[in-house]
Image (cartoon, rainbow, N blue to C red; front, top):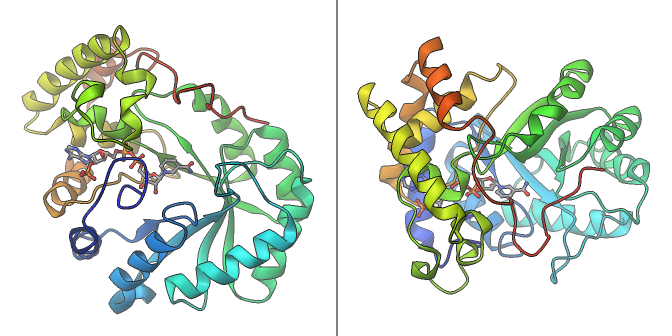
Length: 300
Ligand SMILES: NC(=O)c1ccc[n+]([C@@H]2O[C@H](COP(=O)([O-])OP(=O)(O)OC[C@H]3O[C@@H](n4cnc5c(N)ncnc54)[C@H](OP(=O)(O)O)[C@@H]3O)[C@@H](O)[C@H]2O)c1
């Protein structure tokens, strides 16, 4: 996502190199969306993975409009999915997510439309993003939902309340922004130091009052990570990996070096004492809302 949205301009060649390095290091799950550059990100991902497409899982998403409204009407889904197949240069999308629940379209119609693509062999699995229990259940009754994607990290733990429904229905979970949009890496800087167009300029966790408290928590997590020979990014990802076998985080980076660092998280083992120390530092997640301007999704 960061190559084309949210975090200022990215270098496409470096982004493609990062994806290829991730594959070399054993990463098999790559996430994109129509929203990320209206086809540009899907094209870049498609180019990056062309040489090993059959060894990996590609996920993409539909459901936004260009002014960041929602549109999951069946005809719109059909148009977006055909575009995604073309932009990615693939015959099949492995995981197709509804990016946001569209309150104006019954979820049964959305699930039914995705089912058409699954029956035609153009999509393998159905996912939802930022959906709540009743939407998940209603969708699942029409077309089994394989995975839910929602923000989850040491900074954002509200979603834990949804995990029992997923366990009950046998649905996997993909934590997005697992590094707290980069705050949980030690690389956070004051909001006004990000470039124009970088969402962290207005992100509540970067605003005065929250920023200092979040910085302090990350300093303490960094000390814990260093005592284990790890980086704080690795600690944040390793923590997510302890949350369940069916939980698969998708850290984002445009940098080869950071891909190398982040994949190292798989080798970081957290003890019960480490987990207790982490809970003491951040018992309820970070400080500040998830999104600015009241845009935090409500789970319906
Ligand atoms: N379903 C949804 O609504 C939704 C919403 C948001 C995101 N997502 C998905 O989740 C993915 C990850 O989320 P995200 O990108 O928002 O947040 P993230 O993974 O929590 O953090 C990404 C940020 O951290 C920086 N970073 C990554 N590794 C680092 C390291 N080791 N050291 C220092 N900085 C590091 C990246 O910068 P550089 O790129 O410059 O390295 C980028 O600014 C996205 O790519 C997207 O596919 C989905």
